[in-house]
Image (cartoon, rainbow, N blue to C red; front, side, top):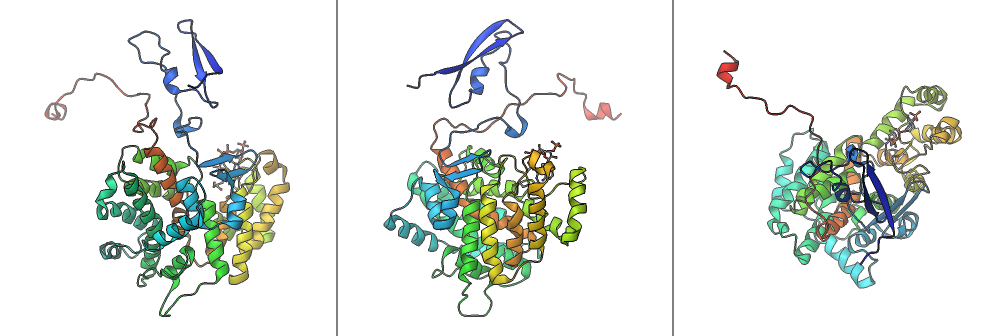
Length: 432
Ligand SMILES: CC(C)(COP(=O)(O)OP(=O)(O)OC[C@H]1O[C@@H](n2cnc3c(N)ncnc32)[C@H](O)[C@@H]1OP(=O)(O)O)[C@@H](O)C(=O)NCCC(=O)NCCS
């Protein structure tokens, strides 16, 4: 029994009536507001919240964010410690299972994911059917959705063992599908997974292997990519996770739900910001052009891309870690000349009153584009990398959703603004 210690008293000035609404965990239930009515046969009061700016859609024990303090934790562990000392597959286990694995659990998990990286040959054939210039995110979204037809048993979402195998399959196959979409754009043959390599190393092999017997990526690049995947693994109820949950709430299979998440991530307001940062840096081109650019930003002509965040009003903790990963990557690839522009922009912005007053700090996208470019990824591929990293998060959220007894099919209300009770005249009379 939960004892309600806090409540909200609402007075409806239309009727003069007062209502007590319980407050639990800093929230009131929209359903409790629904009891507020002008008359019994009138609809109850509803809340209007486009974009869910102030609406909680679930209770979740996966990711904690305190944007004011710049804190991000997965299952209670700070992102800094995970990025420094863990691996992407261990973090994926943590997100999906809720606690860190024992040695045996970890070995089994890595084994399972490694041995599910191959896709059915028919998946490969239909991916080959895309146009030569198909966007890799479109290919990824379609091929993940298509996996539901290869694993029809995935529709049985109430069986825990069935859910578990689909989660393994999806985390395992996402890099394979992403790499196929990359090779497709380049007109190169698709490369099969190499089960002797780690998750990130195998991905690099599927992207870049040519005629050599074995592709051996530089360990520093493998580590940097693994770190980037960790940083993107979850971010609580962001737009793509919300899409996964909304579609998943219909009890559809997880491939269809995650494919909806990939669709949401494809949008420029969500996954496309690092590409915009890169374009901005290219346009500025030189440190000497920065003062004029900053003046333009302050005059409201444009935004400093990669700065500011809806949630973080302090340094995005992921941006700090990415900066370090960038140094490691540039050690191998040579410094991206745009790095000097980025560093100088950051220095100026962090000391400029305009940005300080508005609490605008670098976000995760400010440096990630530079790293991806140094790794020779074309900008349209950046979001695919994001999707691969985010997959365990989507799946952890989906698992939480389907086991949450409070969840229902996601079906918002609307405020109807159209016409009512018009008389329909048949077309032949209207057009006569
Ligand atoms: C991320 C973002 C959409 C957050 O937006 P938000 O929380 O709604 O913040 P607001 O748009 O209300 O911004 C508050 C103020 O800061 C300004 N501002 C926000 N981001 C800015 C930026 N990147 N450059 C310059 N000014 C910015 C706004 O113009 C506004 O100024 P005002 O109060 O004078 O009108 C926004 O900061 C942005 O567009 N950043 C650049 C794109 C980006 O990097 N996106 C990736 C996010 S991970």
